[in-house]
Length: 632
Image (cartoon, rainbow, N blue to C red):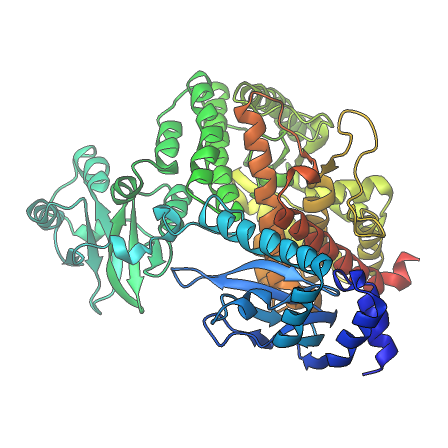
């Protein structure tokens, strides 16, 4: 080591900068230096205690904690000028795992040398111990063991109970040659609400539930001597025994079912039902879904729709992660919108042509929490003549206006910019949509880029999904080789920089209603969403959810491969911070917004937010480097 380099580093690193020059020289003379390759474990939880305080000269580390359930949770990131290992020095074991996230160089201050410094230098001691124990121990562990932003909560059953633990008995089965009557008799004898139909190879072929007996046999006067396989339901929806019960809830919501198979090591282990989950939790989002499905009118949906917001509070109290909350809320909102569309079809009759109702924005990405503006459009099948197309447009005009007004009744305000199917511009035949997408890509004006950011996150919600699938295929083909368009999109994305100043301070609003606050959505969530959208368009990924895009691109995109885990962590953190903030406003009867005062956060939360913004900034720099020939 070059002695002057070490001195220069320490003079700019708290709390060493508070030392007198003679003391600082003594400290510099005792330091050694170590190099840790990226992903190497420096200290391991429950391993030997550290023998040195490590001061990060270059690179960075992540600090993770293994919970009672065996899940590793990242609780902190530390970078240049920061230290780690103090808590370990004070005890006999290492309480966390510390891993290098980049190639990392550290100065090492031996335990005895550190303690001498603490004993002899009060200013150093006060700053050092307060910053570590207050910031990283008291706050972190209290938050993690309570209602933490980092801890899923081992006491919260829906999100920590493996599905396999709910299986209490062997699966009841019948052979595929059994009759309907024999299947019903087995269900009655075993006192179960479902039976699995097994094929000739002993594999599950389908499921018969009490609903199938009511709706397919009794209601239709079907002969009970017919084969049981003639009324069984497909496909069989399953979860792994290791999956948390939340996954079973999500699949029941998504597929409108009440039974899910549980698979353990490739074999059928049992069945869990919505009743099992309701007993586990006392109540769950399934109850809200049931309320939605039971309504036949828009007026009936209005009071039920308010319960969806209530479910956010329930999920927060259960210790749910942000990703889990937005999935559940999006599924419930999807159900409500479909019920509105069903009501519209009953009112207006059979549509003149096949159509698909698509959604975009946060709804398209399945990232809704509190009610957002309506962001939807309609694709209808191409017509042979102009007269037929005009007839379809006229029919859909009244239909979409009814849906818009009904959704507004249910708490979804109209989009101020008019990005709704009730706007004739966004109620088009398939060929018109293809033409729009092609023109936006070929002529990337500012307006075209804005619309691309909005509409390219579309997903089908109701109607004929093949129309949306064909449009997605067209988009994928139209983007092939279009580096100029992607370059313009990249340029637009990197201009939205994170709100950090030169001295690592937050850049907040200087005046107005939101003075001293920053916008979590615009400055935190939007840059991540935009970057992942860009990468998805580059690689032709069909996923629209940002979390799903990370997983889909993990092995396909160099930047995502490098930062996938950090991206997921950062997005989880910012989303959950936003949900907590908005729910607090909603409970207090205040308007819900995205603005937060950084000084209202804990020290750990502020530090994590800074680290999140640094990650976003680093990724934007990589995008600029990747597209610099096209951006400038």
